Amino acid sequence: MPPKARITKDMVADAAMEVIREKGYENLNARAVAEKLSCSTQPVLYSFATMEELKRAAYARADGFHTAYLLNTPPECDPVLGIGLNYIRFAVEEPRLFRFLFQSGYVTENNLGEMIDSEELLPILSVMREGLGMSLEKTKEVFLITALCTHGYASLIANNSLEFDEEEAARHLETAFRGAAAVIGKKETV
Image (cartoon, rainbow, N blue to C red; front, side, top):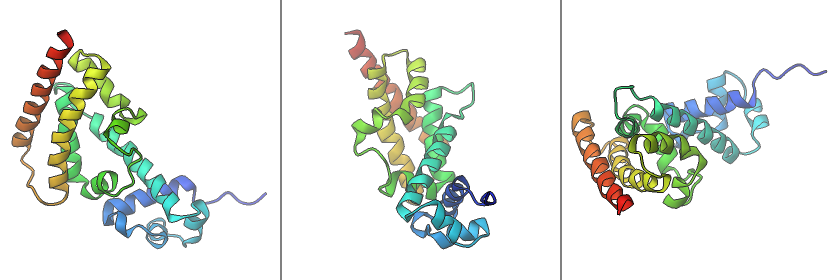
Protein backbone atom coordinates (compact mmCIF):
# COMPACT_ATOMS: atom_id res chain seq x y z
CA MET A 1 0.00 0.00 0.00
CA PRO A 2 1.42 3.43 -0.95
CA PRO A 3 2.10 5.89 1.87
CA LYS A 4 -0.65 8.39 2.66
CA ALA A 5 -0.23 11.70 0.83
CA ARG A 6 1.23 14.40 3.05
CA ILE A 7 -0.45 17.21 1.12
CA THR A 8 -4.21 16.75 0.73
CA LYS A 9 -6.60 18.38 -1.71
CA ASP A 10 -8.17 20.28 1.21
CA MET A 11 -4.77 21.59 2.26
CA VAL A 12 -4.12 22.81 -1.28
CA ALA A 13 -7.52 24.56 -1.45
CA ASP A 14 -6.95 26.19 1.95
CA ALA A 15 -3.48 27.34 0.91
CA ALA A 16 -4.90 28.77 -2.32
CA MET A 17 -7.40 30.82 -0.32
CA GLU A 18 -4.56 32.08 1.88
CA VAL A 19 -2.52 33.09 -1.17
CA ILE A 20 -5.52 35.05 -2.44
CA ARG A 21 -5.98 36.62 0.99
CA GLU A 22 -2.38 37.77 1.11
CA LYS A 23 -1.55 38.53 -2.53
CA GLY A 24 -4.84 38.75 -4.46
CA TYR A 25 -6.46 36.28 -6.86
CA GLU A 26 -4.43 37.57 -9.79
CA ASN A 27 -1.31 36.19 -8.06
CA LEU A 28 -2.69 32.69 -7.49
CA ASN A 29 -0.55 30.07 -9.21
CA ALA A 30 0.79 26.59 -8.45
CA ARG A 31 4.16 27.96 -7.34
CA ALA A 32 2.62 30.40 -4.82
CA VAL A 33 0.43 27.63 -3.35
CA ALA A 34 3.39 25.23 -3.19
CA GLU A 35 5.42 27.90 -1.42
CA LYS A 36 2.61 28.39 1.10
CA LEU A 37 2.59 24.61 1.74
CA SER A 38 6.39 24.35 1.75
CA CYS A 39 6.34 21.70 -0.96
CA SER A 40 6.98 21.33 -4.67
CA THR A 41 4.30 22.15 -7.22
CA GLN A 42 3.67 18.42 -7.79
CA PRO A 43 1.09 17.96 -4.97
CA VAL A 44 -0.72 21.12 -6.11
CA LEU A 45 -0.90 19.97 -9.71
CA TYR A 46 -1.81 16.43 -8.64
CA SER A 47 -4.70 17.68 -6.48
CA PHE A 48 -6.18 19.96 -9.15
CA ALA A 49 -5.89 19.22 -12.85
CA THR A 50 -6.18 22.89 -13.80
CA MET A 51 -5.73 26.27 -12.16
CA GLU A 52 -9.40 26.92 -12.93
CA GLU A 53 -10.35 23.95 -10.71
CA LEU A 54 -8.11 25.26 -7.96
CA LYS A 55 -9.63 28.75 -8.22
CA ARG A 56 -13.13 27.26 -7.94
CA ALA A 57 -12.09 25.30 -4.82
CA ALA A 58 -10.52 28.44 -3.32
CA TYR A 59 -13.70 30.35 -4.15
CA ALA A 60 -15.81 27.79 -2.27
CA ARG A 61 -13.50 28.10 0.75
CA ALA A 62 -13.60 31.90 0.65
CA ASP A 63 -17.40 31.88 0.26
CA GLY A 64 -17.81 29.69 3.35
CA PHE A 65 -15.43 31.91 5.32
CA HIS A 66 -17.39 34.98 4.19
CA THR A 67 -20.76 33.50 5.22
CA ALA A 68 -19.46 32.59 8.68
CA TYR A 69 -18.03 36.10 9.02
CA LEU A 70 -21.38 37.68 8.10
CA LEU A 71 -23.36 35.61 10.59
CA ASN A 72 -21.05 36.42 13.51
CA THR A 73 -23.10 39.31 14.88
CA PRO A 74 -23.36 40.35 18.54
CA PRO A 75 -26.61 39.18 20.19
CA GLU A 76 -27.65 42.75 21.06
CA CYS A 77 -27.34 43.88 17.43
CA ASP A 78 -30.22 43.84 14.97
CA PRO A 79 -29.31 40.76 12.89
CA VAL A 80 -30.01 42.40 9.54
CA LEU A 81 -27.97 45.52 10.28
CA GLY A 82 -25.29 43.39 11.92
CA ILE A 83 -24.96 41.25 8.79
CA GLY A 84 -24.82 44.36 6.60
CA LEU A 85 -22.13 45.98 8.73
CA ASN A 86 -20.18 42.72 8.77
CA TYR A 87 -20.33 42.70 4.97
CA ILE A 88 -18.75 46.14 4.91
CA ARG A 89 -16.23 45.20 7.63
CA PHE A 90 -15.25 42.15 5.58
CA ALA A 91 -14.33 44.48 2.71
CA VAL A 92 -12.26 46.56 5.15
CA GLU A 93 -10.48 43.60 6.77
CA GLU A 94 -10.28 41.22 3.79
CA PRO A 95 -10.20 43.42 0.67
CA ARG A 96 -8.45 40.82 -1.52
CA LEU A 97 -10.93 38.09 -0.59
CA PHE A 98 -13.79 40.53 -1.11
CA ARG A 99 -12.56 41.39 -4.61
CA PHE A 100 -12.09 37.68 -5.39
CA LEU A 101 -15.59 36.81 -4.22
CA PHE A 102 -17.45 39.70 -5.83
CA GLN A 103 -15.32 41.30 -8.53
CA SER A 104 -13.29 38.52 -10.13
CA GLY A 105 -15.93 36.79 -12.24
CA TYR A 106 -15.84 33.60 -10.16
CA VAL A 107 -19.22 34.13 -8.55
CA THR A 108 -21.35 31.08 -9.34
CA GLU A 109 -24.59 32.99 -9.88
CA ASN A 110 -25.07 34.83 -13.16
CA ASN A 111 -27.47 37.49 -11.94
CA LEU A 112 -29.18 38.89 -8.84
CA GLY A 113 -32.15 36.54 -9.24
CA GLU A 114 -29.90 33.50 -9.11
CA MET A 115 -27.99 34.96 -6.16
CA ILE A 116 -31.10 35.66 -4.12
CA ASP A 117 -32.43 32.15 -4.78
CA SER A 118 -29.12 30.40 -4.07
CA GLU A 119 -28.88 27.83 -1.31
CA GLU A 120 -25.80 29.59 0.08
CA LEU A 121 -27.85 32.70 0.90
CA LEU A 122 -30.56 30.82 2.80
CA PRO A 123 -28.89 31.07 6.26
CA ILE A 124 -28.69 34.85 5.92
CA LEU A 125 -32.24 35.16 4.58
CA SER A 126 -33.50 32.98 7.45
CA VAL A 127 -31.98 35.30 10.06
CA MET A 128 -33.43 38.32 8.25
CA ARG A 129 -36.86 36.71 7.88
CA GLU A 130 -37.03 36.00 11.59
CA GLY A 131 -36.01 39.56 12.42
CA LEU A 132 -38.44 41.13 9.97
CA GLY A 133 -41.37 38.80 10.57
CA MET A 134 -42.10 38.78 6.83
CA SER A 135 -42.58 36.08 4.24
CA LEU A 136 -39.48 34.75 2.52
CA GLU A 137 -40.40 36.53 -0.74
CA LYS A 138 -40.75 39.92 1.00
CA THR A 139 -37.55 39.29 2.96
CA LYS A 140 -35.77 38.71 -0.35
CA GLU A 141 -36.98 42.11 -1.59
CA VAL A 142 -35.72 43.86 1.55
CA PHE A 143 -32.45 41.95 1.29
CA LEU A 144 -31.96 42.99 -2.32
CA ILE A 145 -32.44 46.69 -1.64
CA THR A 146 -30.24 46.60 1.46
CA ALA A 147 -27.62 44.46 -0.29
CA LEU A 148 -27.27 46.93 -3.15
CA CYS A 149 -26.53 49.75 -0.69
CA THR A 150 -24.21 47.54 1.38
CA HIS A 151 -22.35 46.18 -1.63
CA GLY A 152 -21.80 49.69 -2.96
CA TYR A 153 -20.20 50.74 0.31
CA ALA A 154 -18.10 47.58 0.55
CA SER A 155 -16.92 47.79 -3.07
CA LEU A 156 -15.82 51.39 -2.72
CA ILE A 157 -13.91 50.53 0.45
CA ALA A 158 -12.31 47.34 -0.96
CA ASN A 159 -11.05 49.32 -3.94
CA ASN A 160 -9.63 52.15 -1.81
CA SER A 161 -12.18 54.68 -3.05
CA LEU A 162 -13.80 55.37 0.33
CA GLU A 163 -12.57 55.56 3.90
CA PHE A 164 -14.55 53.40 6.31
CA ASP A 165 -16.54 55.38 8.86
CA GLU A 166 -18.52 52.78 10.79
CA GLU A 167 -21.02 55.21 12.33
CA GLU A 168 -21.81 56.82 9.00
CA ALA A 169 -22.05 53.45 7.24
CA ALA A 170 -24.33 52.12 9.97
CA ARG A 171 -26.58 55.17 9.68
CA HIS A 172 -26.85 54.87 5.88
CA LEU A 173 -27.37 51.13 6.03
CA GLU A 174 -30.08 51.47 8.67
CA THR A 175 -31.86 54.10 6.56
CA ALA A 176 -31.81 51.83 3.50
CA PHE A 177 -32.92 48.80 5.50
CA ARG A 178 -35.67 50.51 7.52
CA GLY A 179 -36.97 52.28 4.43
CA ALA A 180 -37.05 49.06 2.41
CA ALA A 181 -38.67 47.14 5.27
CA ALA A 182 -41.32 49.82 5.75
CA VAL A 183 -42.24 50.00 2.06
CA ILE A 184 -42.15 46.22 1.52
CA GLY A 185 -44.00 45.63 4.80
CA LYS A 186 -46.79 47.94 3.67
CA LYS A 187 -47.09 45.99 0.43
CA GLU A 188 -47.46 42.78 2.42
CA THR A 189 -50.35 44.09 4.53
CA VAL A 190 -52.23 45.66 1.61
